[in-house]
Length: 260
Length: 319
Ligand SMILES: Cc1cc2nc3c(=O)[nH]c(=O)nc-3n(C[C@H](O)[C@H](O)[C@H](O)COP(=O)(O)OP(=O)(O)OC[C@H]3O[C@@H](n4cnc5c(N)ncnc54)[C@H](O)[C@@H]3O)c2cc1C
View (spheres, rainbow over the protein chains, first blue to last red):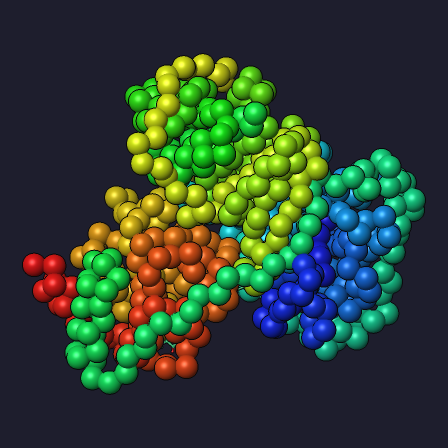
């Protein structure tokens, strides 16, 4: 089985963030692998280990991605492609999906694994749109996976009605949730080996396409500005005798907030 | 004039409140409204669809559509959108909406935006507001296509009083099943539980509850209040709660009148799912816990001691 895994370098959400003049202040930000993509990498590596698979990752944009890709190598990914092109600075989900379509078409993959969403946008669209462009079956919000035979996988999707068990015919696209597994920490040996591995960096031309074909200059949507999010104010905090303060708070819920 | 197609949010044969909220917003911006309802045995929902504020009802009703399947559902929505000439296609927040919206957008070659909290129309220009980066910032997004497919964040729009529509049912043709993605089974968690999405009160349990006994203790409080019973990720990963009960960035977004966080620390990923609640009560034994930064009322204490007292006091005040 040949697996293509998508990974994106994104801002670390745990750090403080400020908005000024419609933009996020760059100072003090750090960039990391998107959390959901780390689970996608772990999913691929487990498939390699348990079922035998060839694993390739692709990352688009993000500037220098060497450290991130090496980390994925150290986790067990075998091949890495970095698509970097100045034409992609305005890329939205559809444009990412168009680029990934080109990558897929060059590689003859059986399974594409994406993270369910990317923590810089929280959009959750790219994998699904990619599947539409490719005409492949797709399941998102995947929390479990099992290979049934050469041509099928069985996945669990956390849906509105409960956990759905879905059989997918390969080739297929899945978008995984963080609950699917616990990504491993790279080990020293893997880290050392990763340093010697090559990363294939390509621009759109090397990928056999162009800005025009991808529609890179005309995204379907673009961020006009960032704004500070409204933060909630902290209210009243009660400490002391549990019986007393709990009674006090219940009275407030009833009489002040009028919610019970 | 804007034409808004709202995808009816139907769960267990019932029309959920989100549908009326979206249709109310559509009417408020002066749009023509239609609804697309997809499922099995849903004919009887027609009056509800009209009362929710739709002026045309596109209905795909077939036993083959009983179980959710993103492919056929998307085909129905695309069909309805084309027939209606919709330029705005809105889903209420749900896992199914999040799975179908990008497909519809790809098929219509339209823009897609998820988690929107507002939409701004100026002439033909569409813009949306949405949170991003785990709710750390908001974005104003300019839409460059004539059509926008969007998933609306829970609690973003309010249902207007006295809204109504007109009955004009159009039957949609039934798409073929997706033979490449076949649903084998749905494992439902304890049936009859209250849906988090439209519960007036949601009570969530966190790692502070430790084990099954702790979870059961908090659940009793939820049962007393007929509240939706949710969870932090820690308790889902611990195997105590079902994945679809998780509140937060990668789970359910809720905006109830009252949200209680019991033994939850208030990680940003959890806050991303519940800070839209009207009133928040937190119970945590750590006075420095970040959950208190967003709570209107905070009780610093051991939940094993506080929860039974909460139940008693609530019973008292209600009688
Ligand atoms: C990509 C990503 C997505 C995520 N998505 C989500 C999400 O959707 N939802 C979500 O919830 N999390 C999510 N998380 C996880 C999140 O970061 C936290 O790890 C999680 O919310 C912690 O759960 P918790 O508050 O129950 O546990 P903890 O952080 O361990 O907090 C337990 C709390 O209980 C208190 N406590 C302990 N004992 C008692 C007692 N006896 N009485 C009272 N209080 C007590 C402690 O003081 C503490 O504050 C995500 C993480 C990542 C990386």
